[in-house]
Each structure stands twice: as C-alpha cells, then as structure tokens.
Image (cartoon, rainbow, N blue to C red):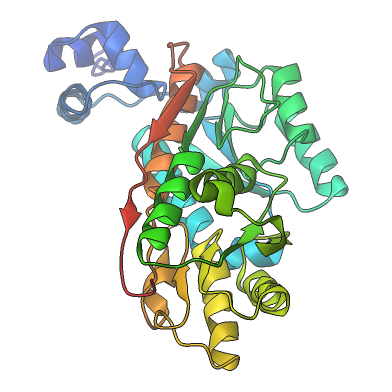
Length: 338
C-alpha cells in the first residue's frame, strides 16, 4: 500500500524478483527479445502472480516501436494463394512473433506500384522489422532494406544481398543434385528439367544442382525454362520437353506444384509414371501427397524457415547478435513417382 491507501502498482523489479531473473531478462521478454523457453515461462508466471501490467503504448512511443514485423511476399497474388510453402513459412513466422507478443503485418508485392507503396510503409516506422520471401536478383527491396537499415531477414539468399543482412535458407544446389542422382539410379537416361523461377537464387541453384548431377549427360535442350513455381507452368514446361524429346524417361520439376502439372501432361500423353517416366519434385508440400502416385521430392522445412527468420528479426530488434546465414536440412523424400 502507498501513503494514500492505494495498492502499489507492480514493477519490472517485482517481476524479476518473483521469477528469479535479472531485470534485463524481464525487459527482453517484454520488448520481444529472445530468452530461453524456461526463462520466458518463469517470467510469464511471475507477471501473473504479481499482477504486473506493462504500459505498452507509453513504452512503444518512448522507444519508437510498433511491436509489428512485416512479412513481405514478392509473388503474384494468384500464386500467393496457391503456394503451400509461402503459407507454411508465414505460419511459422507468425507463431514465433506471437510468442514474442509482436504482430505480423502481411505485405504482398506484385508490381512496381506495390513496391513503392510498401517502401514508403517500411520507411515510415510502421514496423520494427521485416521478413522477406521470394526476392529476385537485383530486387529493389534488397536495396531498400540496406538503405533504411531496417532489422530484416531474408528467406533465401539473393546473390546481391548486402552482407550485413541475415538470411535463412536451404542448400538448393546440394538437394537438387541429390534428388537427380536418385533419379539416375533408377536407370533413367534421357532426363529433363522443368526449371522455374531462374531469376531467384532457389531456381537458379536447383538448375545448377541438376546440371552437376548429370555431368556429361546434361543436355541444355532438355531444360524447359518457366517463370513460376506453379501448376500451369508445369503443364507448359512438360509439353515443351515432350515436343523436344518424345523419348524422355526422367523429369526433375523445380517444385511439387510444377511436378503436379507435369504429371497430368504426361498422363494425357499416354505416359505412365513411374513405369515410362520417373518424375521428382521439390518442397515436400501438400502437392506431393495430392498426386497419384505420390511424389518423390526434397523436403523443404517451410515452417522452420519462417520461425527461424522471425527469431532472427526479433534478435536484431532487441540489439542482439544474429548468425549472418542459417542453412536448414532438406533431405530427399523418396515415394512412388520415380
């Protein structure tokens, strides 16, 4: 009680004492920083026990914080709704941000006008950081993030990404090489690739891995270049390959959605999978189990990518050190399509 008879308002000191941690650790939890799960649980229990109520509005205003992180997807609107990987990355990021009491703001960039609008938004202090998905080579967003020095982490690694900006990703070259070698081991000899999104590191790296796996057997005429990781591009790419090489007996599709489109086209052409043509995809997304037969593919840990990217941004916001680049495992998953 105070001298006026009113109960004293609980402070950060009270929470720290009740939780058995330092005041700095309590502040990291309150400000969205990273602490261990045990410490966070102890602090949250102490907050409830002592009745501490943080004044978010006042503290955010004083620190010029919004308690929000932007999730930027650089994809066409239609693909954003269809692509299960982007959705899974988003859910993983949101889970980590929610745990740190941060709001996720979704921003879709599908045109130059979108880029200008989002650029003004990011520069205006409306978010404390950003997670960027599907940036292309020489994308304006990479220059903007470096210029305004916004805490940010990229999912994927555009080749011109500033060294000071962290990223999380997978080994696209190694994974593409591994799944192509598995396809070769099934006895296929005329193997083509539907290579999507070559303006991104993921697409270009998957083509590199495919080429490395084939070595002297690589035939550039058996590469169909398509713009997007979607079903329609799989249909178009497979038609191109069949026109160029009717005797094709193996196909590496740059994503599961592309593989699903390729599979339907092969069926329409009277080709059996895997008896006549072995087919492999990439992502281990819902597409992989939706096809008949189920796709052999590469597992991309999409939710983990989102969670890791969000935790990286939160550490930057809190002024804590982060790893410049994190590569997650992406093993081959062998099923029945090859």
